[in-house]
Length: 205
Image 1: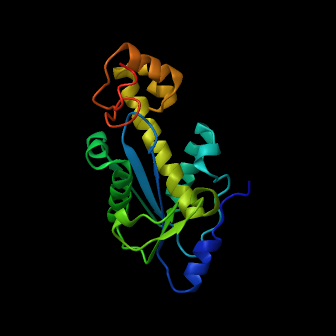
Image 2 (image 1 turned 90 degrees about the vertical axis):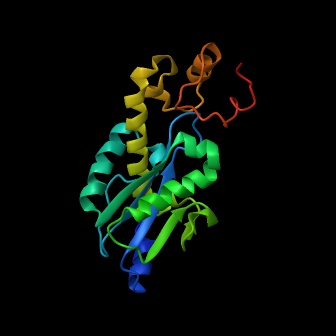
């Protein structure tokens, strides 16, 4: 798989869009924990960041190294999140859009153009260009995914000692066998998404 490039950003810079933000979120699928988003703006002419790839195929150590490089190289970057309560109240799609909007709003500038991983997201509430598979082909989107992934993983690792039976230090809240087994043997925590299957369907209890 080729590494993400800055071709899309370069084309936009050439058209006069100087502040192009890449936007992505992490954490739609887990049974526990928030959804976290990041926005990254590179300066026109930014060189490619070595080792930046789709965050899902990178090792934790690779993500940490690249995240440090992204933070150093980016013109601007910011994070946003939506809580478990918000996910349960408004659904994961709207909560993901909320986290991404918060990341954009925390940038110290207003982007001229926004690139978002995936398909159109009307819930974002602002103009954006969807890029299918953006975290694997578009460097600013890929950088945003890496930042969001590192932050969310750290959060779940920090929560893990409070609820050791769920093994969040390794599964990060996803529905792994050990996580599902712990749910069958005990009650959900305040960090579990009660509207998510299998908990919402009572399959565990």
